[in-house]
Every structure is written in C-alpha cells, then in structure tokens.
Length: 344
Image (cartoon, rainbow, N blue to C red; front, side, top):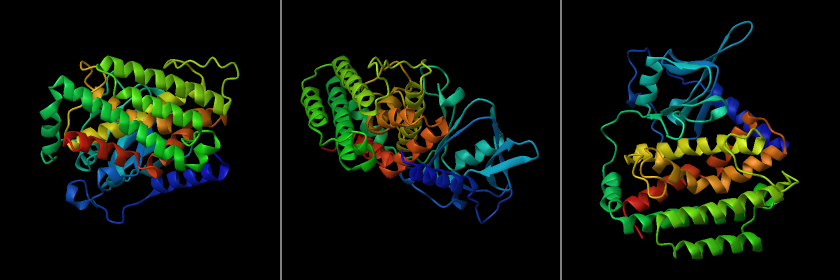
C-alpha cells in the first residue's frame, strides 16, 4: 500500500480511538435507546486489543493502557462497532460488558496477534442477549437446512456469491489491480469462470470443499507470483508458520470471522447451521460466511503487506479499511438474507 494511504488509515484509526460522545451518562442511567442507532451492516469498526483493560467510565466504554508517566484512556465508539477481539494481557469489567451487550457488540477472546480464537478450532463469541432479533431469517434458514439437496444448493450459491464479489472488487480496485489482482486479466478471468462452471457439477459438499481448496491454492500461487513474496515459489499455507504472509492471513481471517459472527447473530441464525464446513463444529457457519470476502480482500492484502514489510497493526488497519470501502459486511448480510428467505 502507498504511504499516503497508510497515513490516511492511521489518521482514521486515531479519530475513531479519540472520538468522544457529547452526552455523558452515569452508570445507572444508560439505556440502549440512548445510543444513536446504526445498523450493524453499516458499522465501521472492529477492534483487536491487547495489553489493556476495557472498562466503563462516565457512561462510555474505554480501554486503558499503561505508560511510564500516566494511564492513557481511549474511547470505543460502541454504537459504531461490530465486534471486539481481546488478545493477550486484556481484561474487561462487568459494567463494560453490560454496555457492549446493550449496544449489540460481540466480544471474543483470542491469543496473541489476533489468533487463534479460543477454543482452538471453534469460534467462541460472547453474544449480546436480545429477545427482539428477527425470527424470519432463522425460520427460513431451518426450513431448507434439514434437506441435504437444498443445503448443497445453497452452499453452491454461497460459493457463487464469493466469486461474484471477487470479480466485482478485483475489477474496480485500483490498488489491487496494480499488484496484478485484476479480474479482467485473462488468467484470473479464466480461473473464475472455470471454477464457476465446475461448482454446478458437484453433487456432494465434500467435493465442493475440495474444489474450493484447489482454487485457494491457485490464489496463493497467484499472490506469491504477483507480489514476488517467495522467490523460491514454495510458499505453503501453514497456520502455525511465523512468516509474515501466514501470520497476516491468520489475523485477517479472524477479522473476517468477527464480521461473519456479527451477521449470524444479528439475523438470529445459530452458528452451528453451516452449509459447507463441518456440521459438528459449532462455529462452522461463521467460516462459511467469512469465506465470501476472505479470498477477495484478506488474501491479496496479506501478501502485499508482507512484501512491503508492514507491521501487524498496519496490516490490520488495511484490512479494516478495505472491509469498509468495499462493504464486506453489507455483502455478508445481503447474501445470508437471500439464502435464508430462499430468494432466487
């Protein structure tokens, strides 16, 4: 990413951190209705925090960091936040959790550097409790979920949405196109079209997953070539690897999982009712939904930022900026709502 864009991203992050509500509330007077309502699909912020304490102070949710001379407080604009991921060295107070729940913010705990989300292979989120979420989406989802053929058909639709998002974003994002992620390129266009044609021919979810895996490996190879990340051409995707591309891929994917978890919670669909990933994994639907945007945004950014030797914080800000710019959360909501209501 160019320097001016990085500086713009940092300025945006600082503005978010230092944003102050004009109206203050005492701890006992706060109501969810006091917040300016912002649709979850339009919220701009997702936070990863480490080595800090999250608390409620003067009717606001803050995180407190230590410096040599004084404690530093930073405001979290909860009405405009989708999820908060708490990493190493963090704690959160009961009062802060109550305010976050009232604002509909999901809270998750993870290891250092943003990964993994606890516990291990499952998605663990502390979801706000609300009896007023819509029921039409979970009813629509469960209406076809029990039918294996319909579940396969909707898994294909989810994968087609993933391809359409990639084709659209890679056709218009000038920064990604500079790095060769251009869907008008003959090689990429051929890959997308071939994958789209093969999707409709699969008659088992296992075959669909295998097809997805082959395309993802092609995308890794494309990214390595475009960014000249690994001159040996032997890049391997490993979750425990310490090279920057793998670390950034882990981190960016978990940010996408935060958006996926927000989507399912707001629409009232339990995380266990997946269409592709293992039916025994309670967070599998979050993985399914996150896949819509991961290859399009996280994958190229991970290799670009690794090649430019950016820090993990700078990479995270690039991801969040791209999620907002290309309306990743809107895409997730629209796709899941269409599947749930069985719209053609």
